[in-house]
Length: 363
Image (cartoon, rainbow, N blue to C red; front, side):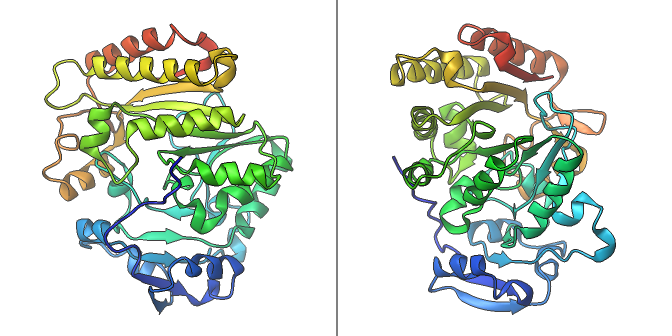
């Protein structure tokens, strides 16, 4: 099973480093992975990351790495966002969890999916890592004293793809195991399951409340629009290994896309669903499909108005970004007939394999 991170032309030849995180143990561990990088001191990551008008595509092809601190003020102590913990956005699925949050341990992703909202949210394509998890765990401790927490840790990046550098998932596994009212989702397109296998071999216990959620797309979408990420078959092999290892696995057919130039987009998704579930049956023939998966989610492409405007400016030639989406309540998606038709078709296909209580659809 592949465990390679990824292979840009110049993997972080420049690393910007805030003084406040220079002496952290995790900072040293991260820097050790890039011995040839030029290390440049900076005062505050936003001095590089926040200015508008940056050459986004050039940065995406040759990103710099920025190691930054939390910059929490004492007056912000009661604000979850001060520790990079935020309430889940309305355009995200909460899987029935009322206390739904996400945390931003990294900003931006080493993959380059044309439809990704991150390119519309951030002014820079450089990658920011916050090495110090102490304020995040401290704020989570406070929240968990008030109510259960459902936390997504990999919305603004792909943590599994970068786990060999940061170790964030390892630390969150330990934290989750100690807090019975915490559920964590780590969404990914990575094939870096080898590092999780090693954690298990080292005796690390991964609770069922730690969910590994693989995003799957038809091969035609993976090849045309999901640059640098593992192809569909490789991702399926990674999630099969996760199931064999006994991990809590979610499959996300999200976002559903009308594929430019294809007469029947639904057919590609039907083929993907059948291929995926039949592969699971073959990989673990002694288990029921419903026992192999925590659940499955699906939802049509959706993005806020402001994010799509930025995305279109940065990818003027992208067929998926320039599609004439329909605006409703401040978010762009497909017209109702296209969105609902595609969703209903896939729900019907998934229902051949799983009971209704294992299927979550975004309408």
